[in-house]
Length: 396
Image 1 (cartoon, rainbow, N blue to C red):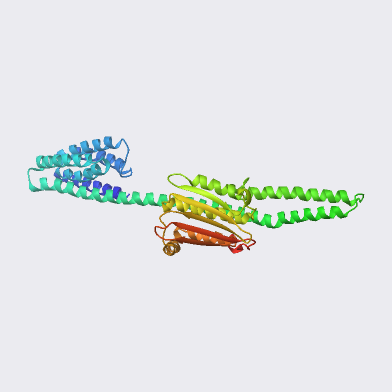
Image 2 (image 1 turned 180 degrees about the horizontal axis):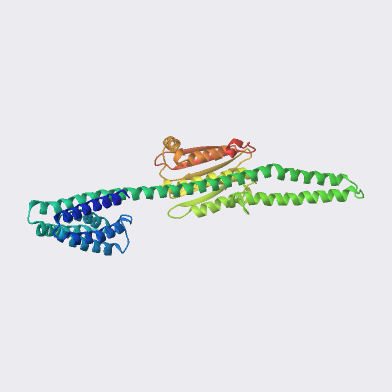
């Protein structure tokens, strides 16, 4: 907008000077100069009304008409030759490279010829158009530089807006998942456990009531109702818990994780220890969900950063605790250095290890990382059986 306004002011000023000089001379050519100046001003205003640089296919036609009008003006009035400065800027801004520079050079030579023919050969007749061309090149270079910076900033702003939108959506989805898991855990620990206890108590009470007692049918109906409510509650819990755990056991979810992570030179295997028939005793749902999320994060780190060829997920269920080990033969790292970097970059979203530690604490466990450069990495999560979950972690 500023460049177009400046060119419009320069065009108006140069046209006014050319018309004023022609009117003062009063040799009969002033009328023709005025008649040519009016369409020149109209066409120039049409060109200036469009953004620079313009990609309109009509720009070639407008520039051609403007150039022809300028030649006619310069042929009648020597001072109109200086309008070439405006034309040079337009050529350089609106014509594709290198044609803008080529046309500028040709018109510069033409301006010298016209100036010398109308005003007579002189140093000014030569230097004027040449200096105008140099000035136009400088102006065009500044404008193009500003346009490039402006476009770069626009693209950066657009990218930031898109990134912010994606981040907001990611945080929203993460919040939804966390809240669904929290609700599933709460329902499991309260409503489902209460209904299960009611069912057991009613069943025990049935055995103590005589068969001919009128209360027995109502006791059986109450027990059946509690059983039906328990089934519906468990269906709700299943719908709220992580998709990977729905309809399958925790070991099966780990095997699916290993299968999906294997490939591209990485082999991931799963071992279930201290469990009969390659299965494990049922763990609290919150513990299973937390361990699965930690395993997913650890395996993702192995794929992205370690360069490992093999990784092993080992689940060990003991009477007093549950332990999950993710071990790889990758390049390893310095845990202290990575932890420090994660703290510094937490504001940028680089919270992988911190997030795993936080999730381990939320299920009442601990997480340790053992690694050194060139020696592979072991992530060890240990959760005591019957550990109290960290409710603070649930709310964060």
